[in-house]
Amino acid sequence: MTTPGPSPVLPRTGVLPRGVLAGYALGSLVTGAFGTVPGLLLLPYLTDTLGVAAGVAGLLVLLPKAWDVLVNPVAGRISDRRGSRRPFLLIAGLLLSVLFAAIFLAPFGGSAASGAYVAVAFLAAATAYAFFQVPYVAMPAELTDGYAERTRLMTWRVAVLALAILISGALAPLVVDLTGGGREGHRWSGAFVGALIVVGTLATFLGTRKADVRTAAESEPSLRAQLRVASGNRPFRVLLICFVVQSAGIGTMLAGVQYFADHVLFQASGATFLFAAFVGPALLVMPLWTAVGNRWGKLRSLIVSSLLFAAGALLLLASPALPPLAVYLIVAVIGAGYAGQQVFALSMLPDCIAYDTERTGRRQAGVFTGLWTAGETLGLALGPGIYAALLQISGYASSATGEAATQSDSARLGVLLGFTVVPATLVGAALVLLRGYQERMKA
Image (spheres, rainbow, N blue to C red):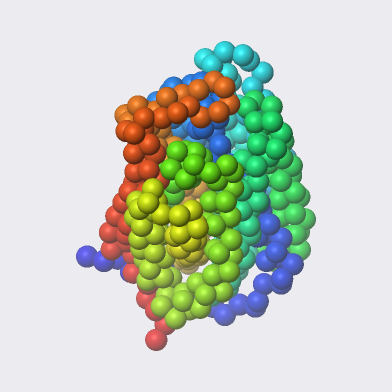
């Protein structure tokens, strides 16, 4: 039996000022950079620069991120009880910038010691990120109670998110190459992304200072009680599970970008070109997705964009026989699908939160977003783990020289399948879970 989802028929609200829209959206410089660069650089950094075996490297990337599954709901609970969420953005964001740069310092010489250091530094950075991301994602439900206005706010946010992915994802590997590669190049790249995080932190903290925040009268008395309420919200639950599975698919593709560029395309700076192809067109289709959402509704639009992503990923199976230009065009189609996924999933989340607030009268957006960001973090962490497992099974050879080793045919097949079939399967199959989410569209 299908449980009705949040109703879009909510009280009419004023339009959010452009300053608030831009200020909030610029926080995606932080979430985009931290959500993208570790998934892009960290696994190949461990296997091709520090000499860590692929299977072990996958665990070192997965475990610190999995820690956030426990930390994020706690961060949500704490931010719910502190009133304003903006101080969390400032303190956690600045701390994250320092810890992110520390991940790539590589102060030890051996592969074992270097791998352990990366795991500890990444764990600390992931903890700081939880206390930025959870309050940040909770804010839209309190900035406006308008169904359409949340879509507008998320469109701004995802547009900046796409820009952040383009800047961090395309330039971080380029910085590595331009500063000598290896350990030294990664140190400069870590510092570059840390500076980008500082810019995003200050921009969203200052940009939202005049926002008119709406809050519910009270919050649930305990974390356990809030988790019980969240688990009882079936639309939220099915949307969350779908998003986690799809995030795992996206994380798998992100983890494979450098490997795909090195061992399938055989192009210098191929990772930079892939990211430009992925994100650049996504910026252009944002207005189109907004129009599609207004016409078809968020749920149907999420399904369409997800299928577009999956179809494009499967087309990339033909990459070894295609010219690079054709590959980049297919990646652009995948990027357009990804943009739609982000817009509609993220705009459906505050609908679920508002639905619960309307039903209970309690302020618990932080716990819902804590669970959401924990799920997203878990999915994005599972991606590199899945990809690393495929590399290990297919016989991928690690290297401590800063350059990828020559690979066998089976290893190159593992690189290809991990970048194409696995993401397509996860993103497409997750749509089955949305049967429990139904919008009551306005007549």
